[in-house]
Image 1 (cartoon, rainbow, N blue to C red):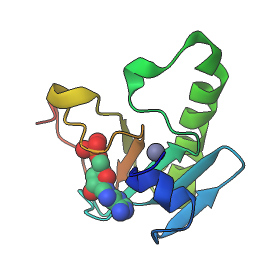
Image 2: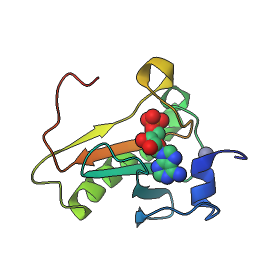
Image 3: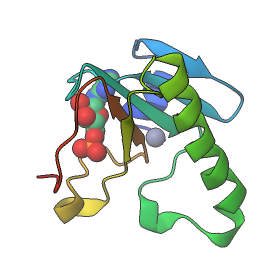
Length: 114
Ligand code: AMP
Ligand code: ZN
């Protein structure tokens, strides 16, 4: 999608520190990390927001979570613990409208989140 920063990363038009890639997903370091390890996992296909997911995306969503787990293992935070977050729309704090899974770790997380 034109003007989507994450589609531009998928297309190689904007650089990113890639930590995982397969045919459907790309994972790269967040540019403004909120934890010692902060990776974003995106489907390569553009989807604006969580509420746009359809029944036929169930398999994609399942794999998305599994890639989140894989990234946690790869970045060394699986055993100590990590948090997976998806922000949706304004009150959810979404700022980039191409769905992404935050994989955060390397420190103790607080609850409730801000
Ligand atoms: P959200 O607020 O959930 O939409 O998260 C968007 C995330 O994308 C933020 O944590 C940003 O720091 C991150 N971000 C924005 N632009 C880039 C970029 N070019 N490369 C990596 N991360 C980015
Ligand atoms: Zn996009």
